[in-house]
Image (cartoon, rainbow, N blue to C red; front, side):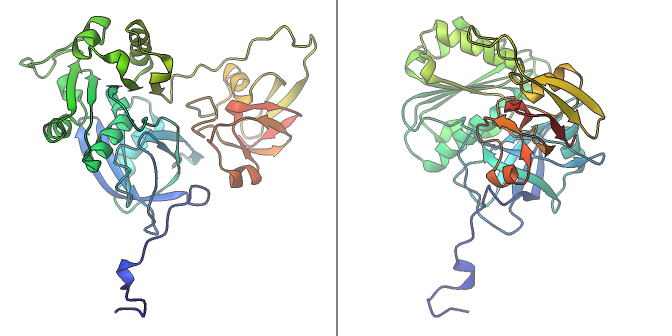
Length: 359
């Protein structure tokens, strides 16, 4: 059928995913990447297009054991393919959400999800060094896939480290991309050679000598790094030693944040207000000062609140405030309609009164 505008129904533009209102994705594909890593491709149940930037992530909140559980996963697919997103998830010992996804999420199932979120975004011009360790490859993989889809000239060195050759994520695909993209130089770095004793390349851990050898112009490049906290700490220190300016170095991690109270300044009054914070479901009451975040105090006192970034970015700790007022300074991890519905982020909120929290 052709309408009077000359457009057939299947040619009509699809609606766009609205991060403020859309909150569920449907799984359309699952496939293994390695022995303990799976990729899940998800789409809007209404067929909406999902606009995002390479490096961003979604917060998934499946109900497990009658409780809501949140975990952030970076998008590993190209942002130029807006019909769906893919997240690549490593099974982690004791990982409640990652294990649930591996064991339960199948094509056709829906899962609560919020996003996209995050500011780990590639500078739009220049030369790049992408450093990834383990499953930290996912956001930078999205960037490489985007560059491949654009088919524009690039100058990228991509160093990916893993436990062994068998643990190197996207190894085959990256090798194909390196043959297609003339400006992509690929360096795989397994720590040990278990499973592949005939490995022909480098092995070990990143070091100043290694990066000086494989990236002699490192100080001229924009560095994008994601991986376990020790890997990123080493990358950050080595990059600084090799002359990389801080504004050229960008990293992403959901688990590296340290939850601490801010130190008192000389201008802090000697008497600080304190408030009673009640966690209704857990039956616990804490005393929190006006200078402490709710999450920092809760963690120290053994109150269970899921958290990742601890900086108001990821939204993992999102909780319902039954009563009371807080001073919340978030960085995009909660939507306005959620705030209006009474939700807040304990990681970046300080009490302004006694609080009752639905946890």
